[in-house]
Image (cartoon, rainbow over all chains, first blue to last red; front, side):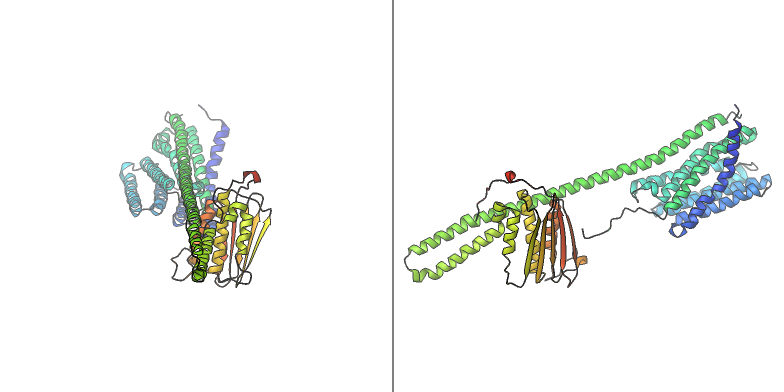
Length: 231
Length: 272
């Protein structure tokens, strides 16, 4: 099976385009900064650091070993920042403490994976898979809490709902690619690499779009409050 | 192409769709919860409305019964006693007792009229409001101006009674508590709404303290509660504005159905 050339070109453009597209949520966050809540500011921090790592990995031409380390750090940073959002956003203290504990466990696992389980590999698939499962789980739990507690009338305008939707969609769309990353890399399949790149770019696009919307709506809360009037 | 790639590429959109499904489900679930809450709120409001209406109707029935008992029972008995006195043949001895009996009969009639305004039943709201306005002495400390605008018409008797009670409540409060020297009441018979606008230049009240525990001797806000209840029964709106020392204003709008002359019910209760 061969892909038409336009798909390959589109995949290339999208890969570079989505790397640049991270500027959209960051610019929106910059404009709305005074209205951003703590979890959203943490997300901005995560986006800035991961964008810096991606920029260095893409433009800095590091050695394969350093590049592998960079991507591993990228995964860890992304998980800690995205997970940190829920460590701040969950309502009960116990839930927040549990999220912190889970993140610490993840950090320990990522170090173990780097040092022992997948030592020397260019892609740490175990860490990626655990990351995906962990963040999908946390986002799912948070979405459930939002649905039950209804902090706003229009959930689709709630910033953390949009962030969680972006996270769930991104990691659901990429989890299998990470699980089987080892097979793709070992096969050295250029066509496959393009397909994977295209798919990842699309889900990344969706995620960044939702993050942009989340930052935009941070200044437009529609709270379930009723104004008290003499009527 | 790598053997693993095709199934992964096929499964990934499925997972993505599942994720989208979860997000959509959360949104739908929230909408459903909101709808349910709205339905519960409506049912609760309707139950409150019915209870309020029943309480008001029961109150009016009780007033009607007491009015009838006073008129037919006490009033008649007093009239018979007066008749017996006159048959004794000692006018010099019975004159004072007879005068007291006349006073008692007049008082019973007055109380009975207040409990059940006969003019309202017989001639309808516009006439009864004019009659109510005439009860305020023109040379008294308070000058009342009751103006009826639009085309004064008859309403359903229950509605007429409730509207009459509202005006009575506003006027009573203005005369008893507001210490106003000028009260203006405008009753506007609109096409399908009836609007009341009450204004006085009295002592006013602090609107922020209406829901707090009233102090001894202070204006309690019960009148306002009654007004709210009556407006609620008629599904109307009540708005008010007041300030200490700056008088009070009330705006009431009621979506009342007018009735034609042929629909005016026959008189069933005794008139006084």
